[in-house]
Length: 305
Image 1 (cartoon, rainbow, N blue to C red):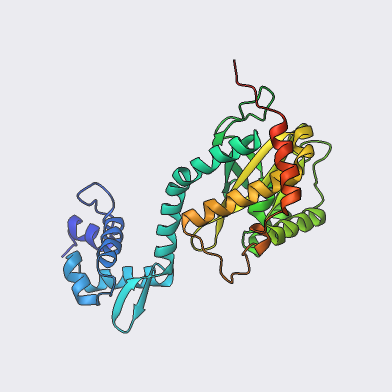
Image 2 (cartoon, rainbow, N blue to C red):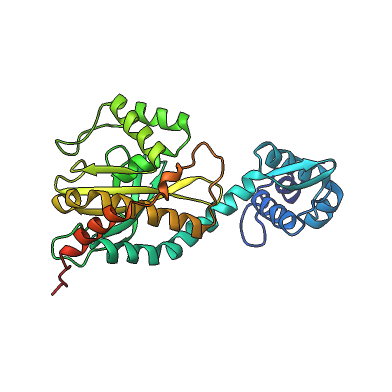
């Protein structure tokens, strides 16, 4: 007897659910939701009952999700796996960064008189994206629209982001990237870039002078997520001569505030190899700091008319 259309759809998992989504997708989402509500885990039979689905279908979903790390099996119980938690942490961090970073961006502008930005890595496009942005109130300042993108290799922020990515991915990026000079000061030699990126990893800081835009200096430090990953960085950008004049102070400030954002997000420094050395929080000697703060305050930022 030929299989009915309804039965065929049930077996193939392409029949639409109540919300119009494919049945297989609906089941995966329901399965993840059920296990999220039962952190101690559930066995196959209660999962079948909860999903109102045959054991063969549910077992196929369980095996696929377990193989990819979204579930894990302990004895006969299935529970959420590390990839599910990683995905959830990334979503929470991505949302909360916009809120958490705002007071620190304001503080960066208030203390430096320069523009402060958050940039995020776009691994698909091999670029970084600027968002959000707090502009300096000075008449002459660094200004760029929200959503502007830049190649990773050229900017201070891009080098910080590259420094804390998976090593294999970073090497592959340097092989495939279009290392086209953006200014006469751009570094395009892969070996030299690799050294600069490694220096950024060790110090937790990257600085550029005129490498993306001829008259702009950039100072960047990584923002760590609770699990130690880095998908964003803090930047302070200034006209190049002002940046050179107070470079030490801006380096210290961007590292201090990036570390504060990381802590507020829930990151706690541990023993990870990607961890920035303790110099990220190392204070500048008082006499030197006093001189630098005096330099930062020397020029009062004029208000826009």
